[in-house]
Image (cartoon, rainbow, N blue to C red):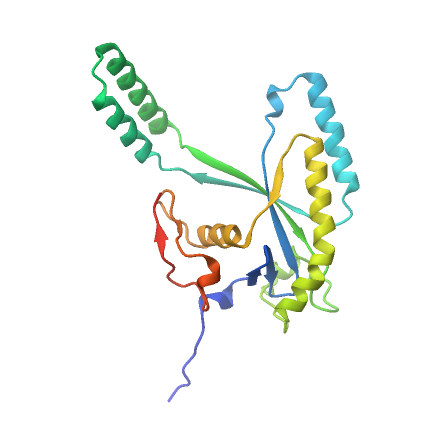
Length: 233
């Protein structure tokens, strides 16, 4: 009789653990994820643009560790917004106001018919300096190892000790990045454990349902998140 193969979906992920507002990778690297705002550069005056460029160059020159900038675009389903407009429209008794509401609804429907409505979010990933001892591709963004198919290389990681050691490195790094972003008018904050779980859940489980998110707090889970309770907003 052939031996039964037991495996889980987590065996195919790079993430080992999400804890204490940080992500522990299987290669021993720990990452903090910042969510940032954006600046509409085209709307700034020439003097303001020059100031932003100068401040951003100072930010790049001041960073002595690797970071990853991630732009995530997600198509939004605003059908519920249209339904809300229709409910408001049906309650309006004034003919002129009702006509204006109807015109606005038709305008929105025409816009989304011709164009996708995207929700764009910006993230900066700050890694620790840990990793597989002696492995030159053990960084947080080991692209060569990924291309070679070895990105899931896993070592025995003491999660609590790794997090404790990594926090000593990450706290000043995160504070520095946040401070430098403030200089160019970009607000940033570190994602919490719950927010990290929700964003990775959304990445690995793309859904057309708008506003779907995990219902239960991450602390309530003692096993792998396979079929978490979800709610719709």
